[in-house]
Each structure stands twice: as structure tokens, then as C-alpha cells.
Amino acid sequence: MQKNIATLAILLLLYGCSKKDSTPSGINIDGGTSGPSNTWLSTISAPTQADSTFTVIHFNSDHSVAQIIQTEYAFGAGYFGEDTTYITATLPVYQGGRLVSIETTPDTTAATGTVAAAFDYTTAGALQRIRYNPGTSSYTYDSVTTGAGGLLSASYHFALNTAGTAMTEQYFENYTWDGKKDLQSILVNNIDPSNGSVSSLTVTYTYDGFYNPYKTVKDLPFMFGQLGDIVPLLSASNPLGSTLVGYSSANNYSYQYNPNNLPASQNLQILQSGSIKQSTFVYFKYTN
Image 1 (cartoon, rainbow, N blue to C red):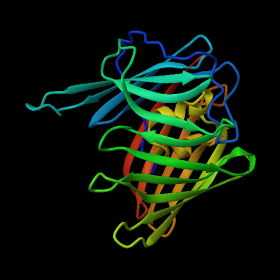
Image 2 (cartoon, rainbow, N blue to C red):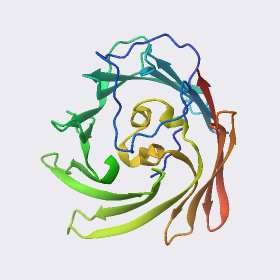
Image 3 (cartoon, one colour):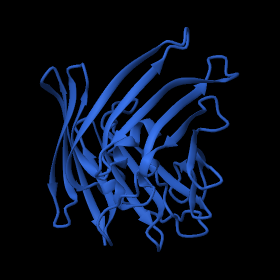
């Protein structure tokens, strides 16, 4: 559920421009939290032994996202064991101040790409549904509801059945938040398609109380994956730990902070049965 969203890109940074007609208002299913004024996350890097990723965020004049260039270096992953590089440009599309779609392309100079996600809203302007890979055989969508304070309360994930003829519900999630607008728990309810039975598991979170870098830029978390993967990025603060209740599995996080109380680096440790199975560092830079 929590995928390590760190990604690396090379600084060839040919500038793209997002399609928008007005300053975005931002998708508000997280209580409207943000970071310190006049500070925006601009780069994310995560080197590992197997691969390295680098993400660079380009902005419009109002500091909405114009383009994200994401490059992954995979060491020894080529056919003859050579290193390989994968580049993806992400282009948000806005209409009427709302994020309506996210397009991706391997061409960093392209003005358009393939629609990876599309956003549907109610007549009142609330987020209603996120559709992924529309018009393809891998089409799925998340239907969302909000509760008190406009906080995300539940989501329902649907996908095409094996015959590709109808959408079926695969799982649904329930969310709880605290008064600081940090996600406290996710109840994941998996549905067995053969008989409709439901099995559940719970993930809980603790936080550091400092600014979340992904919240310094409007709509940024939604540009890093599907809802089930990015919900923890909607919290106001940074996680110190996440625990899969009833299992010997947990993630621990530690940080170094800059003078604005934003993380300069994050160390993620994945634990199983009390032992560290993986340790990853992520580095953040900001623009003012």
C-alpha cells in the first residue's frame, strides 16, 4: 500500500507546460493542509544499489505543476547486463481551476501524452471518482466519499472482470484522521470475486508533526500513483511509522529537517519480524 514513491531523473529538463486555464484550487479531500508559505518541493532523489531515481518538478508562474520529469537508472538491467535509463514526463491538465487528467509520455518535449488518470467531480466541485488508464484493458477506477471537514472517508476500487465485459468491485478502504489532519488508519477490505466474501486488514500510522513535502505543491500526491498508493501522502505531517496490524510487518521512518521544518532527507526501514529487510534514503530539495 505504501509504495516507495522516490524516483530519479536526469537534468536534461527540457521545459514542458501544463494545460490549464486558471490557477488550480487543488483537490481537497485532506482538509486543505499545506506547507510553509513560498516554499515548494522541486526535486526528489533516491539512490539504491539496484537502481536510482530522480524526480524534477517544473512549475507554472503560479507554482502549480507544469511538468514532472522522472528518470530511473536501472543498473545492469539491460539485455547484455548494461545499465538502462527510463524517462517519464508527467503532464497535469487543468480546466476551470480543477485537475481533470494526468498524462504521461517518454518524450520530455511533448505537449500531450497518454491519459494515466482522469478526475470526475460533482456539480458542487467535490472529487467523485478517479479513472485510471481509461479506454484500455487495464481500466480501473476509485469512487470516493468524504466525511467531516472534507476529509476522505472511503474509497471503492473497481476493475474490469477477466472477460473484460463489466466493472467489478475488488476492494474498498475506510479512513480515519486525527485533529491535525493526519491519516490515522486504513481499513482495507478485499473482496473475493468468486463468492463476494470480504477479508479485512488494518494499517495504522504515527507522525512527526512536521510539514509533509508532498503537500507543499497543489495536487502533487495525485501525480505519483493511484489513490490506494498515495493516501498516506495526503497527511499534513510525515509518518514515523506504519504498522500492519496483526502481522509482523512495519515501516519505520526517520528524518533530517531544514530550517523551515521540512524534511531534507528520509530514511525508510522495512521491518519483518523485527528485522530490517530494506533501508532506503530519499532526499528532498525545495524552491522558494
